[in-house]
Length: 285
Image (cartoon, rainbow, N blue to C red; front, side):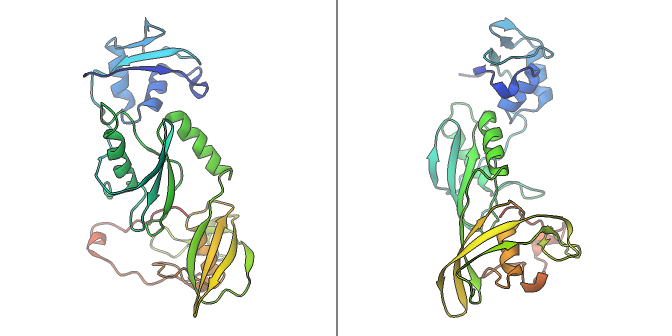
């Protein structure tokens, strides 16, 4: 039944915030000005008392809102095949295939994991667009694997903190060029932005900009003729960390479109998509 009426409990993270700030966090497909307009129209309450947009909310209170207007910051929902491995009220875990970008960026506003998850959510709620998926970590476009997606503000904050503080252990499997001699090892090499690259590429070179400490533990799983299957566990979360570190070790990932040994990069050949704007490189591990 439209318009939807929601009842939301104020969490500890929103204690003392203005009601419009609280609602903007919960309803991320709405802009703040639209929520303020809805509040001014008399459609919001705090513990069943009429609220104004400057009122503050406190933990345990109940905020009611009648969404008189539709969302105005919508993600484009797209029916893209994307296996959902796990889901509950707080989060979903999806199996991202290689070739799929994690989230919209720049001129790429469709065909991403987030667009697919928005469609998946909308199929399970009576009012499409009320829940916006939250990205808490990323995978490169050519990397496949599990991604955790936050479905609420609280889970978005907590999951993001867990990833940022390395409370979540992430392990990747990759095939690299050449035969890695050691059965296991630790790569400790700071990573920064490559100074001469056209794109947002990373490097361990001495002249890299804004370098930050980075560590990757690796273990050889199997050796082939000219190639090695390795397991990598990044202890930090730098952009392209595994790709940069393995190339720094002298063993670039097979098929990597950018990174070579000794801090070198593959030549870039423009495509039709690059004619009007510089190509963007996805961030992630």
